[in-house]
Amino acid sequence: MTVVPLTRCQFLIPFAELHSEIGGATAALLAKFRLPTSFEEKADHYVPLLPAVRFATAAQQEQGLSEIAFRAAQRLSFEHLSEAMRARVRHAPTLLVALQQMCRWAPCEDTILQLWLEPIGESLRICSKLIGTEGISHLEISQWLQNIFVLHIVRQFAGANWSPKVIAFEAPYTPSPEVRSHWPNTRFLSGQKASWIEVPVKLLSLANPSNNFRPASSDHEPQSFGKDVVSALRLSLPSYLDQGGLTITQAAEMMGVSTRSLQRRLSLAGMTYSGLLEQARFNNAAKLLGDTEVKIIDVAFSSGYADPAHFTRAFRRISGCTPREFRERSRNGRAAIDPRASLPNDSRA
Image 1: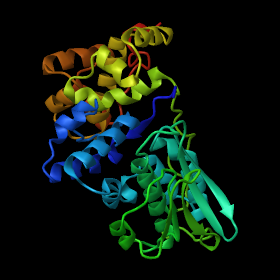
Image 2 (image 1 turned 90 degrees about the horizontal axis):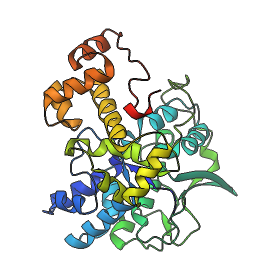
Image 3 (image 1 turned 180 degrees about the vertical axis):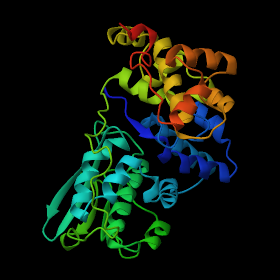
Image 4 (image 1 turned 135 degrees about the vertical axis):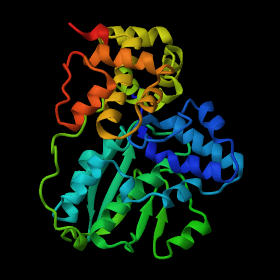
């Protein structure tokens, strides 16, 4: 696999919660798989997908917890999808349009996730697949979440009690009797070419109950998730900032390349690792200052600065103002940053 697949932290959180609730040493197990050890304010940040799957598998085996993916899926709702996905669904006039938008914006949830629609007689299969993961074990953990978030989108139109007649998994996975008891009217299939749930075609014309058909704000193209190590690293770094950030050796290991290879790839992209890390810290701080009431000292710590004075100097160097001034300008709609200033030092002309 040449792509480094990423998933939103939101989908890792319920597994970590389950492990903690039954007495597991969750932080230590997360650290073992090079995952962030805290998730506060990180639902929309990204982490490598396969280490997340390995964490969930280890948590299940270590604690003797059966069906961990099913239990995690029970904790998820429509509100746990990304804001980009929720906005497109809420503003879709019919279920069919919502499903089409879902397919288009799927990489916002998992960067290698592909969704598509397959008409089968009087039913429609909503199919999902993690591209490039063939042969990797325990992917039913991710496939449960893929099927469940599709289910929650359908329920926005068909009602909270709607259930599919069929839930299929690409993995060779057979749900336990306990799981089947929660889905008495649903048939489960395994070892399919893709994961999918089945929806009657007659439901596709269901109108959006919200009656809110205006185009979603910022109705632009979905974010382009680069299929290279540098792009994946850029997306992953914010999840680790409050732990002080990753060393270049740790970052290279997480991306599955040598330190020398990572340095070479960064150089070809016109940057250094220290510059990329500085950019991630600044972007995280600017978002927290502009969108939240988090104390400035906590913004510093969550952005990876042990010394608030160092944070203030670094922020002023990039933005031209102190963090406090930036927050005041944001509230007044006057926060403006030279676009070149937010780039790593080594990327500026």
